Image (tube, helix red, strand yellow):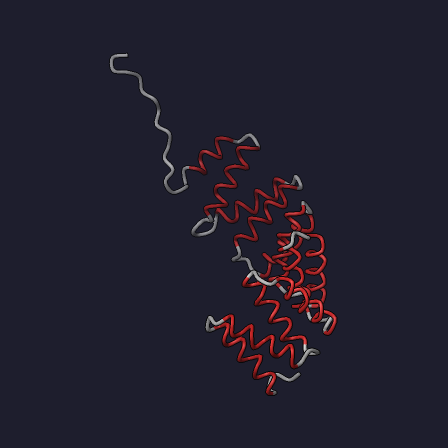
Length: 219
């Protein structure tokens, strides 16, 4: 189906309605397109995405995605959205499999990679999580959340030196990443370096140096 066709114009109109904040009319138009063109996967994918976004009628989203993945198995967005649906249902292993398929068909699908890294982290698959967070961070060095999670995945594998180095890089930024300061301080505490933790803590906003207790007058 060509997007410049009348059906393509209807699809664009539905997406414009969503951008304007009218999700219900957008969804109605998308599902009308599904009824009129049941073999066209794009309205099904967009309808499923909108249902997932709204957190409602997930059974309908599932039906749309099952059909879309059968009609266009090489479309990575169908697999990505299936992964989100499975994550919503708590089926993390299946969610991970679908997101891996999405990345197979589109290696630069950063949203899928970031989501997959988080799922593997939740599953305790630290090495896989690290690999995806590292790839995401290379593409988005400004993404401090991914880099914090990358350090956490390294630490979970016992590679404390590498985790510390990543946190130190975040602390050295201008301005420093405050959560990295806190996590690096915690790492120092856990590894028996309280003096470094205390020195780092003094750089946090609102932190004060401990005042030395004074004896009573005349003592």
